[in-house]
Length: 405
Ligand SMILES: *Cc1c(COP(=O)(O)O)cnc(C)c1O
Image (cartoon, rainbow, N blue to C red):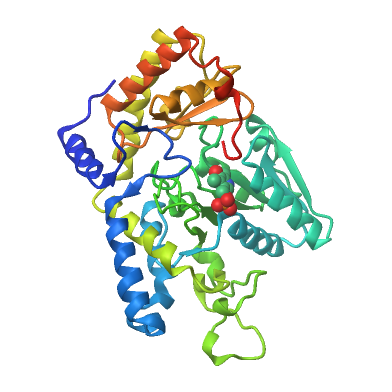
């Protein structure tokens, strides 16, 4: 294992101090809900008391609320290898996926296949199936195993729609290679970056990806239900139109014109009034990434991965690693299989180690170097070993499923 450089150690001890985590908790669930950056608290207090409380409706102009989606979009753009003016923050990932999928299908009118992979995050497949049905034009969602993707790209494929890092296993696709293959066959690509943005270096521009969407509340730490982002490649920005033709995607919303005319550029991806409170929280959360290189984040996450899985292999050898060992083929989570994964995870949470469970038998541990250190993962792995060895998970209360897992 490579040791952290002095620069990495300094970077991550600085970022760790930017977060508020409860005493006694090792938080390994930033892949599901990022931790609270301290600066968000102060920003929320200011936005609520001053911008809203005192500025009232004037703040749309005086605090430039109206352009907040594009401003925050540009900050996200830097983290995903996108040029300024190609990303806006809006809506949820599911809704953004709907918008870009319809847009992409309309750009490939003769083709009927949306190609994706089995075991993708369900919302992606649900939205695609819904779009196919809504369009009523004979579109088909074709789902294949990850290994069969490149072979399945043919002249019928309109769109290759993939999640770069798999939510369940943490396996990562080769975005550049798959984008090339899809485009060589005349198809467009949509990348879901929910488990990539803020976790690994992403280069949408370099890969030549056509569209991308992603989440604000996972590795970007924007808070529960934070608005999502949407990327459109420069080539597709001209004349861009999308199906949710709301007034804030209009070229001149305050002309209150009778007919819709899309805004120029990425602003056409907007739909309705932006959620200023949660968008401000996301904006403040992104301060944490200032001066942070995502290559360093991934390298440090790889060190956390090695330390964690090394100890688990010794202390709980019956757990099966579901995440690729090759660092270039994974994101920054560790997934472990156990037949009673849900109960084991509940026993861990009761001991202050917070990860989560995914059907049918996966325990997920998010390794987020911004606020998780080598000492944390070492302790977490030892506690996991104890829980497994002692069978401490085998209690009725740990089998009780909550509404949200
Ligand atoms: C978390 C996640 C989503 C979430 O979509 P929402 O609309 O924000 O609920 C979508 N896709 C993937 C791959 C995810 O991991």
